[in-house]
Length: 92
Image (cartoon, rainbow, N blue to C red; front, side, top):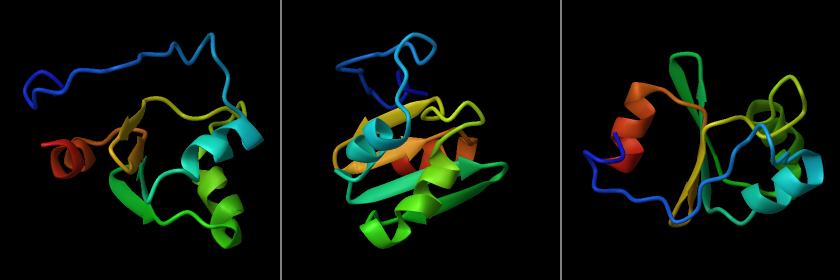
């Protein structure tokens, strides 16, 4: 998908080695204007604020409490998880 859209990562982080939990994850997420989360076959879209912090983290953190992978920051958007439709809509 990235090659087809001519997207080249500036930084790649191995989520198994670098853990982003709770506050670290929120500090990264709250910098975005829009957060798009793949949840099953659907997409959830959030505008981060302190009032919806817990809801966003509930969707963006996995069972281990770390930021779900893949997590892609593109411009002012953060894309968490994966669905074909989500990547097609937000990356192509």
